[in-house]
Image 1 (tube, helix red, strand yellow):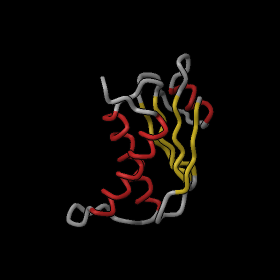
Image 2: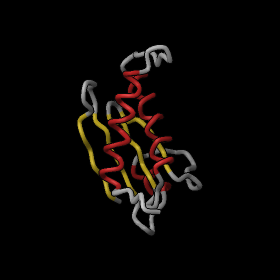
Image 3: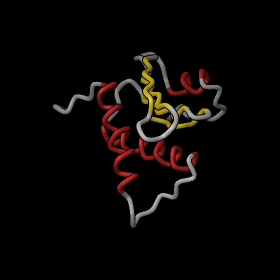
Image 4: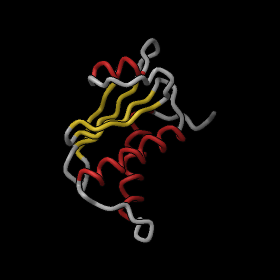
Amino acid sequence: MRTKTKKIPLYTGKLTIIQTEKEETLSDVAKVLNIDFDVSNYDGMACIDKHNYIVAFIDKTTPSIIAHESIHAVGFIFQEHNIRMDANNDEPIAYLLEWIVRECHRFLNIDYSK
């Protein structure tokens, strides 16, 4: 299991990105994080542990799964900071989503040639 943790800009807390190795599943990640939820059929997951926002992916993930889990992380961050997600003022959402997706892509070495 590979991990990377970074301080989130503008907000308190950290983002942890996890990628399983070939023989691991997200169930292995859930066990490490003490999560009692069946994620055996999931390709990605997002959760929060205090002010550590976690996104986790199987070893061969896709940009769409990264975007999906990243918006969950944005929701957790906004909820923890009592910030309302506002469709009429979505720039803060877009900024944070862009940052999370970029950090995930960098860490996961996404190959766009496929």
